[in-house]
Length: 417
Image 1 (cartoon, rainbow, N blue to C red):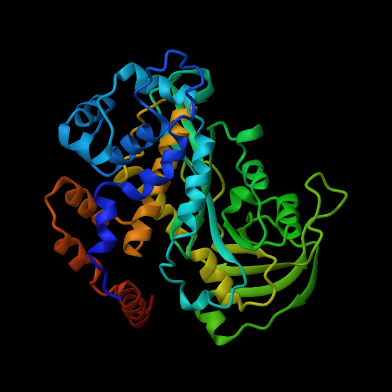
Image 2 (spheres, one colour):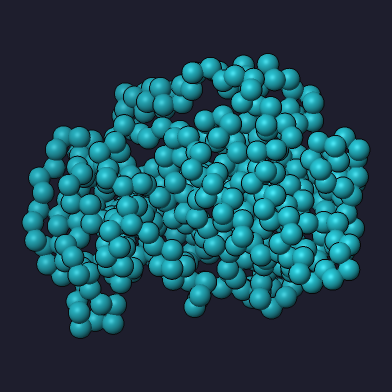
């Protein structure tokens, strides 16, 4: 259905989100006994959204100058702030209070379309991954790595739960980047497990006890396991269809994994182990160009408790995990989250919340996957360089992405790849 002009007017002044944020106006003001606070929680988030939607604003000082413009004050209801009050804000505002705004926006999200091959899956498909957010902050909390040359790396880690059908992250956690204890990605995921979801994970999440926990809450998992994973017993061997073979599936078995007597324990339910042919490669190290482990043997081993879908569906489900990698790149580069306006963990969390809100706004207003051109177009629209007609013309264009990808796949098959 063609988009109407009325659907765009709320975006121009960010009023839809501003109305939801208004309940947070006095949050964090308990310590302001003098009653002279001018930068409130809702103002702070609106300023972050302004920063995210305008690539030309690349620093806190630049944002301060923009906030001082009369037109910005009229449209957004914010005013020029001091750098000190902006820096201090992340210590008094509680990021978790933005979860209520996220939940309200999530109820309005539009599906962007599920691949036909996944239509029979029973749960919401959620891809899980983490990414480092580098920071110039040199506090001990953010320091996680000492390189071979003695220099230290400082970063936070963002743990994302990415809903495929709506193409936005609706769950996330920010931790230190050490990857141990409370920041271990499996520990973080275990804390926020929910029923009715299919978690698609890479082998860093492979843990028998985590598989048991996911299964116990009424969800499912699709997870790559290590090359040396061997079943304790084979319960049954499924024959492969022609479509399974075309997808590169080598075997499809229902097995038991692990042994109760081992330290790693065992899965307390039957596990399906689907082996898929892939291109062998050497595992590259991040530093000095070395390797950080043994080379792949050319077989992708996928463990899942989904026993009914065909093997090729399981293979495609894991293969399409790259969409979260693309989103993370969009999240960092296009939305500007590679640059942090705060180097304190609370400030990082609030900026991530603002970025998720920005993605949800794009979904609600356009019904499209948030992409670089859409963010650029909306930025031009906010700045007055693009008209409502320009935006509507872009939104009303047919989305031929699936058709083009299918034609590309067919071409590769004809070429023998």
